Length: 150
Image (cartoon, rainbow, N blue to C red; front, side):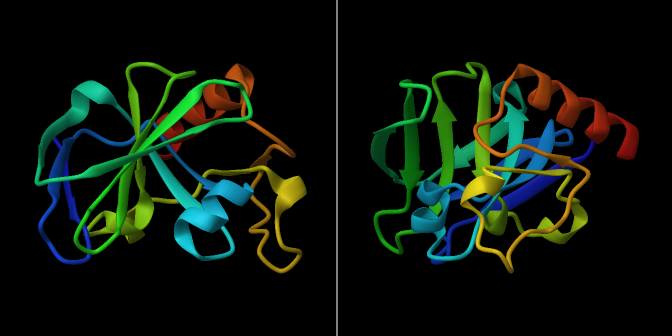
């Protein structure tokens, strides 16, 4: 079975995932821009059961998503790195910030969402794209694309 490891910037929080992600997507929403301090965020969605290890202290920040459901972010209290978040709208899944994976380059961004909020020069031109929030059809298309490319 494939395993993937990652950590925060200072190394006090570490994790290990078993199995490939369900999908990897670029998010252009303003919350991801703020979370990363960049033009977009790279989100790696996994089945919650695939989180084999997650150790180290974290702090939590909760915000309401566009759906009206809570998004609970976990970040390192020492270095401030956002590691993962849980979206109430999609239970049994965890989303990791792509940059915290040790080997993030092995994953391909399969789609883009919130492209209506994208900076004009930051679009990747992915085949799968969504102008706003993802819906079940978009998430299912991402899962299928991940299966066929992995």
